[in-house]
Length: 209
Figure (spheres, rainbow, N blue to C red):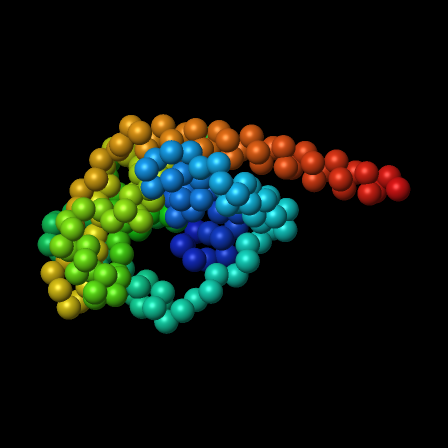
């Protein structure tokens, strides 16, 4: 694993992510049941990433009040977690696999073999998570991809709300998920190379006219 030191959300962090599938976007390539997606959305994702890399920037993220509140809550949740567990959460920027094919921006790394993903959802959503007591379906793939990128075998998922007890769930590497991520990345990068070659050929042909 390689770690880009730029602070998450900074220009340097955004540049490091260009053209690379990440933990938060892996659902474009792998289904919730851990199968490689061959949907139109998966094919479109290739062109989106190629456009990012070619342009040198990604479309601006839309910032909302809810999103900013969630970010503030994550900082509060990290402090709470460290105080309650005695574990130090190491802040990191953008983590990339050694081969550069996939990345993740963990909310933190814990010790030598763990990491943490923190969500600060609306109170009613938090209660739903709390009642279920498992990593929510919509975040399972993100957590598995974080483990894939960092090489760690465990990950801690936290749902945090100021109004209710927090939820802490410990997840472990799922071989089925890890295999699906590998296969999906193989397919993505094969399609990326084909798309890049077609684009290069088109530009070459236009230049010769």
